[in-house]
Length: 262
Image (cartoon, rainbow, N blue to C red; front, side):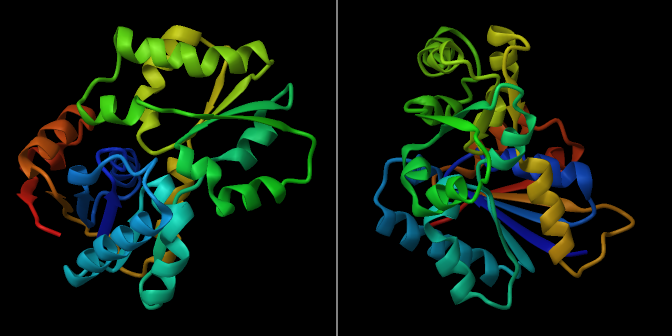
């Protein structure tokens, strides 16, 4: 059994934890949410980098054999430095799935919904430049979505109003595929499908991220059962309640929650 750390600015990385539990539940998972400082999407690059290094260091001190940086903003701005500081520990990041989206789109017009920091990052720009095809990417920052998701608001008029504001122009420009470029956004997939039906093919890279995680770790899976512990820089109890609401996994019923000062 390996000890695997997963951290995000808030609850968004639970979408990665969920996929990890589906693919390989027999490990010890430590989920760390920096809820006291969420969202990261509009903070300075230096702040995100320093904070991400601190959180990753904390997880490694807890004995993690690998860490998933389950935040697109932290990945784009800090993962290179995190890997440099902890070369002995596999550090897995997340990035918008523009490559699979490009292959999926019939019209070669793809919408990318992400945080402003992700869209502005050099890493994202290099990712776009690496594609050798004629696909058009319509980029849109999802201002206001993360705070709503952090409060467990995943549907209703407020969410739908923002989705119309951000996604309707993509459809008007011919997009047939949508990249969810923030780990919070997969929790909106149901409401997106409710509002837009099959007009947008949704791309979420959680499965690919978790497959990469298990390619890199060496510890074998427990044949009995794994476990989950959740930590928050704001309120561990609230984080666990949201996790139990969002992820219908039995391990979370017995998970331990803790508020930590980092």
